[in-house]
Amino acid sequence: MTYPEIDARGKSCPEPVILTKKAIIKNPDGVIVLVDNTTARDNIGRFAKNSGYKVETEEDGTDYRMTLRKG
Image 1 (spheres, rainbow, N blue to C red):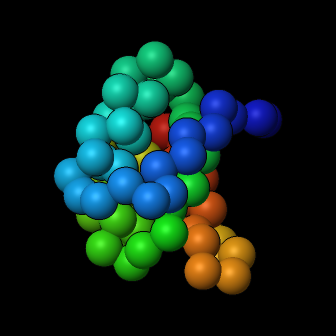
Image 2: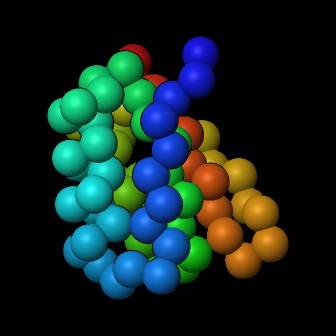
C-alpha cells in the first residue's frame, strides 16, 4: 500500500509531530514522514506508538524515512 509522504526535514520540534498528527487525521491508515534529526525521529515514533501505529524507520544518509501504519 502506498501512503502519503510528509516532508518534515529542516523543521524543529514540535512542528514535525504536529505535521504528522494532521497527516494521520486525513490519512488514518498510515503516512510516511521524512525527518532529518534524531529528536524529530524519536518524538514522532513515540507519538505514533501512543496513537496505535506501528513504526518502521529507515536511515537514508542523514535523513530518516518513517512509515506509520495503523495496527
